[in-house]
Image: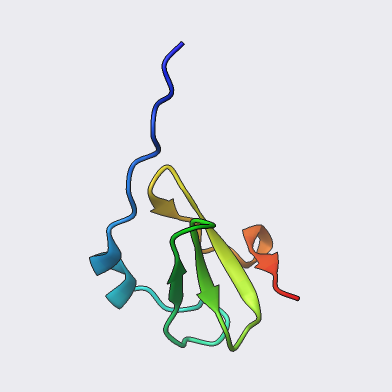
Length: 62
């Protein structure tokens, strides 16, 4: 079985995305494959190169 890397997140997309809760810009965490909303204290996952911008899917930050 061969390891298949997940598609890369297109960082240019980050300029168009905003937090659905605060409407502020997001920070990309490449290591965790998440988009961070500092204002909402949430981390939105990136799955298969696609950001999941649903508040119900976001992880609360400590």
